[in-house]
Amino acid sequence: MKFFGDFNEWNRNEFMCEKDPFGCFTLLIKANADGTPRIPHNTKYKIQIEGADGQWRDRNSAWSRYQIQDKNTFLFDCVFWNPPEKFKWTHKRPVP
Image (cartoon, rainbow, N blue to C red):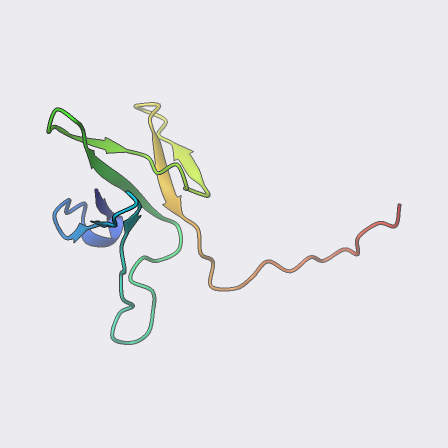
């Protein structure tokens, strides 16, 4: 499985996931030298999976927290959601 997106100019060969003996894929993407995340907040990404027939297919991750739909193609893209500041509630929770 490969991981790619806006953050690496859609280069499908830069990040190859490793498969463990249980069939789970893992990937470690280190932060930039200045400590900022390599994948910025609100960045589009996809995964590429090799099928049983040996063909590679682009797919959306089943674990994506946020997706947007392209208005022209109607296809969905995964979006990396990691805002720099946590959301702060401005109203108190109502008492039942």
